[in-house]
Length: 298
Image (cartoon, rainbow, N blue to C red):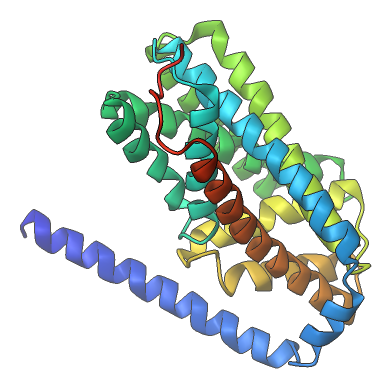
């Protein structure tokens, strides 16, 4: 079997898995959701909280992610204008909102390579380390909730989660050591923690805006669990799988069926807002200074 045949089979399997998950999710939504829920959720939405609060939190999130990326680039001897890196990051993170497993974030590799003739291999490896850190802390959020929840940490599941988190973290540290980051990795780790906390805040604001109330620990588990389901589904923006996961987790935490449905709708609105606001900010940055000047610092 040649390489092309293997790739075609792999692609077919991924499509079949994604299709099955999507069909199940759609069936679940049709059974548990009502078309009337959408206008009710829109009327319940506290727009004066939802829009400005999420706009500020997203700007801070994009800025922190840019600082993390710049830290890795500088440690590799690649220095660029912070504002230009911010613009590239906003574009790539916005693309990631609507792409399978947030794969659209990889756009920043090609964008910076084209604009600054940067080493594509170095950029790709830095991106890989960034994603490893993100995945490690996503599972760490899930694990931290299980550790502090009464009776929630079952032996086998706990061991599996510990192994996953440890393995991913060690792999990230190993690759970082190869890249000669050394102790400098702690700064990106701090940026990673801060960026995740900002995303948690965005989710909390979105839920509170429709009066779907969950605690701080529960929202952390909700973010981690829903994003894992979204990535595994291989569907753009985790359509279906993320909604089912969020609904079931909210129900598990004791949220009423109606409030859980409104919460899921609020999270979908949040994703739409992230995409549209990202496009808006990208356009503003584009027309503010366009492509004038070099992306290199100084």
